[in-house]
Length: 283
Image 1 (cartoon, rainbow, N blue to C red):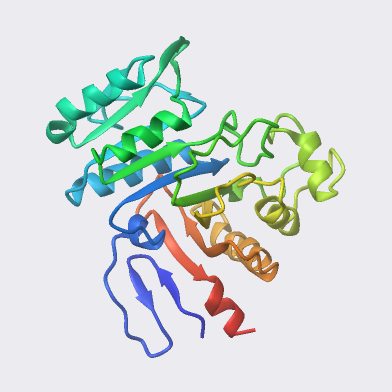
Image 2: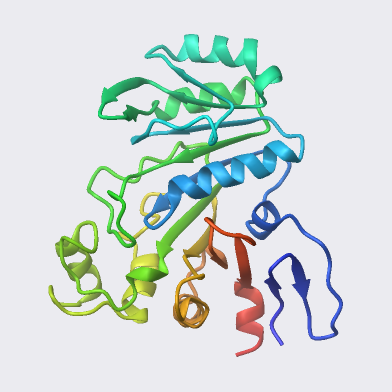
């Protein structure tokens, strides 16, 4: 059997398991990482849930965006700082990160509850200063849709990204391809071959995840890539997620090392992890 992670345990065909921290270990995080999130269907929720998990394990975490996000609430982040100067952001982190342990930073308030992020080179400078154990970056937008194709200028990955998490919402499976349901429907149609107005199937979602112009387009060559299929808690979610995961892995994309099946608004946030090398070995 292929090795997989189910709930909070690694399960193998010999029945032996080991305890793990659901998100950080399921994503294969090392002791220091720059994690960039791209795609649709739960990026912001995943960012703050992962940050909170790392915070509770004693780590120092900075969360931010290279595009735009809603201003975080006090339940999402311990501290929030906005300044157009990268040096001022660095000074704030130097003076306050030891106290708060998790700080979200942004470059500008835009109105209507939204904030503009910081430039990739600023993220590199903050990382080089060794102020935090982790920086988690939301690298593109999706207007709350479960599926998307990136705009021409997105995602905006910091060049020092060590792990890209490419996210799709399982609730997009079976939806009609239109403006109401997905972000950039015309481009999704072009990439997948699904006509506008037709329903999105598992193969189409796998193409979105693996196409050169798909979810993690432009990811730094040195970064690892994990696919994350969110909302597996929905009706028939586990079955749908496994179907999409199998289609993704069948394409044998050289950069996708694992597919994580999750439900980041609920516990446990990860329901299963399927590893590329184990999938190949069992085929």
